[in-house]
Length: 549
Image (cartoon, rainbow, N blue to C red; front, side, top):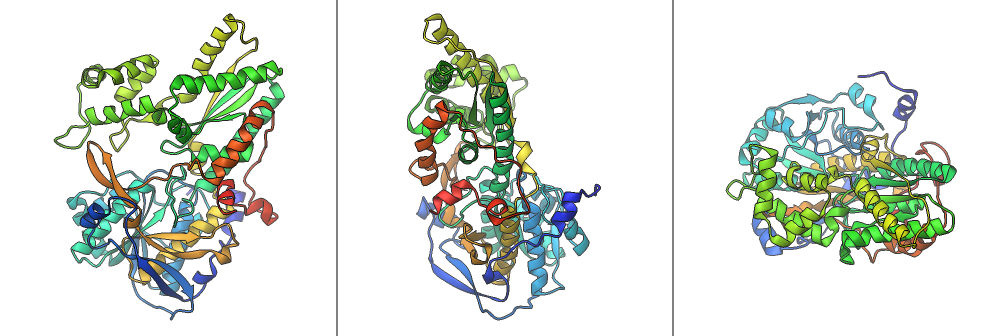
């Protein structure tokens, strides 16, 4: 391991806070039977052994347990701040039940389970990673657990190590895989439990039971510090428009939260663009109008926040991308088609999509057109994050302003700078909130295992209250599922949570954005604070605060 920084040494001494219900023996309180959020009959048929289970809540006052069991843990998908605290919380939790219990980590994601690559956690190893960012303690990966051969390979090593339960830390796709694995092991009566933990900095793994996915708080605070720094520079130099792309392909939670924290001149919300059926030109015109209004007041500078997935929410382009995902999937295998060259792939796409979609494709800049035809993510979908949307929008705004200037409608100056904040937030040292929240999620998972639960997500609720008042328990993963079209077929997946346009966070933003557009009302949040008054260092996101008002 690399040399430890002074900050890391200090953070190692921080003891994350736990809900009162988890501070001693627990008793399980079960609610009513549940059903999936959509396609109830189909999901029930696909998951007969793990469907309809009750939501569970832990209360104080149960009988102490000294059960002996070993646990395995997997980090799946992209990094999110707090993953190490989920592991340390789980480790402390299983050891508190019985010091003889062991925790094993599978290396580099789900592939470690399939390939039997693992380590055993020890006190010294866990202590070196408490309250740190990143996933480097065991690494992460994007292998999908969906084939019977993978499940059977996994059970071999689980039996060899005497592992009773597997905890999978991931986003909606990873937890969908966890649900499939739980169902398979239950159907085969293998006696292995599977528990999920809600991770994604994008913030789109949330619902009535999951208040927020871990890492979202830290990532947004990290990005907001950077945005505030840029706003300060913007307001100092007074000569640039800064276009800042933020993570969030499937939802605009990060962009919205960062806007609430920093009050930029413009923040685009993908869900609103789709709801208003806006074209790309509509979006460009909106930005250009704000630029022109500020220029008329002598302010030839500003900040624009752009969610990385906004292109996919423009209805005409969304329709195009949906067809691209279809034609580039081999219906016989469900995998991405293979071509001998990039030119062959582009030609194939253009000859196999509908004329109206071809027209939209060819209306885009050539580099964007080519990216849409070529780049695929691990799930076989168009890799929207590679499109430099911030540069595309600023170039189109510049073109429109030049046309307005020629017509005598605009007389300002427009010069753009571009930024993309993604990796900067994924492995940041977790905020106090995420340190506490993640530790509680892991500790709580140990109690779900001790209670014999499988196919459940570890959940911690009421997190705008002091940590002692947080509510711990579990939610059946099937409760969150519906059917969606993926790679040319209908598949069971956890429903993503989008920004709700009738929700309190967006409504507050919408009530302020005209004021922020014309005025220079920037807020400079500064770096994440780990020590100090609670109102400085222990605050939740603005989103959660507004949702719980």
